[in-house]
Image 1 (cartoon, rainbow, N blue to C red):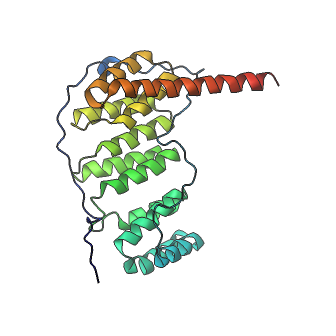
Image 2 (image 1 turned 30 degrees about the vertical axis):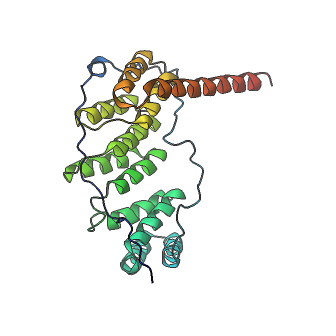
Image 3 (image 1 turned 45 degrees about the horizontal axis):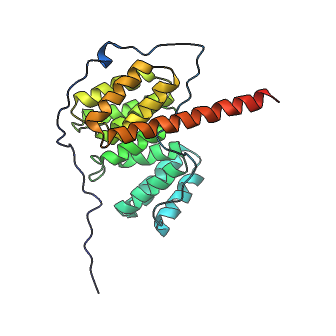
Length: 258
């Protein structure tokens, strides 16, 4: 028998030693313009929300539990399934099960499973779990639950990472709360957590769509501080945004000519 050592699935960092960036004053005095006649077209966190194939093959036990959860018609039945089944599952199976429910967008079942395991050792400080749930609630525009999860992390003394901040920004944008998205971006920088390419892409595209050109210019300047090859990145963002705008205008012309 050959044994192969693999990195632990349960390794994680509670905090990261980010350098503290300069705090730009541009955002502290700029408010997002409101225009009731303008519709915000939201660019989501991911390229597509279509159901993707599972990244791992689910174990037989995990599949059985998923079926049982789907068949449960009440919270009481769900609790029975959780209490009777989860003690027999390996941690990797629990994570795979939760990921599969998220992939299928079963938000209620995800929340039940998450609440069942969130305080268990090995899960309670796993930031990726909270980020996944914030993403799920953001997609479903359940902003109150996303905020509750984010606050729960900070109340436990944990430090949100770049992904968690970015998922929270995306959740606010999908809920039409751009001012809150900018606010959480400021908090992200103030905490010493560095925004990444996805953070900037989400903010720049959506601010462009609502005509916030001053904020966009400020964000592009900050790309030079945080993003590798900033000129190339900014060009890519502008090209993608321009292409989508032209496509949208073409569709309007076609529909208007019918």
